[in-house]
Image 1: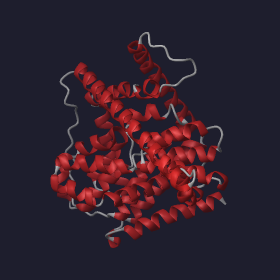
Image 2 (image 1 turned 30 degrees about the vertical axis):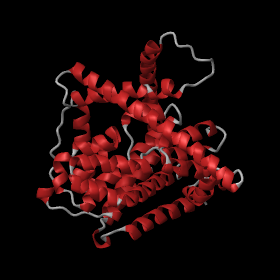
Image 3 (image 1 turned 90 degrees about the vertical axis):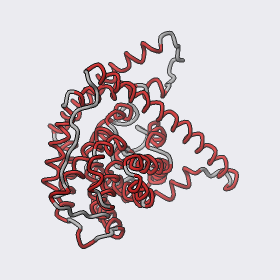
Image 4 (image 1 turned 45 degrees about the vertical axis):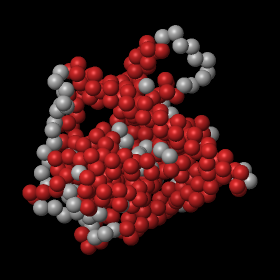
Length: 396
């Protein structure tokens, strides 16, 4: 039954994307089929094979060790600050670790390790899917650097991007997460589901965006000219730049959490007064419960799952993860895995402004275009999250 629901969910996602398509005649169904197959193989390999389990355990151990190193730095600056035993201070225990992970990314970029890795993975992705090189590179780059940084990396190609190509690169950015904050995610939710969500969401974003905005480009318009090294002049400058960038990210996330959680509390106070104790999350739970059920979440947990899904879309993934975290262990493993994969992306309303603002800074005209189809961008990115979570649910 769950497999049939999963297949139905995949068909609905593709059908909705097809209904939203602005050029149905040029949809590359072969490339889309290849990417769907790649998702199934990746998920099966990671969840169902001994080698896949070893890979997940190895990556998990690596992240846990890196988190230990980061916590050493956090402990040093906290000095004599005493935190009540059993208390968890999110900013100290989770967000400050972003600084260390951002520093590592900056160092790996300076050493040309990440740029080369991204370049060749992007080249391979373009070959097997038939997508243009720029879109493929941007999709891979988004897995490591997140939405704004990934778009900045292709700024020299922006003059080649028509509306459809601009939609695809923006959708890839919204469907991604930054490697610098994965360490924060895995402290809240099961690491195996967070890790498998990263490649799944890359493929899903490309699948949905390629249906909504198909592209065909001439060879002279498909040239990747990406700067392969960082702006840092030395190893230690790269460290410093990464630390500063990580600090900015941590403060931005903290500020957004304060704003969103406080605003959510205000909205709940209003809805409870108007609807007799009903919260916004409860309303969202009923709205999104059919989608949660189709994704493979048991019917008894669909309303609570729908509430978390809706919270992520109207706020951000961190707020939703904080709601899911205390439920882990108290809800089914299937619900936990599906929700974790769904939440591991930047598909939310605030990302529309971030992406439009980034593009605006690179090209004012194209920034205005992104703003005009911002809602369509969010719908596509949400469909991509649903697709990823459904594929994961087939193997949980």
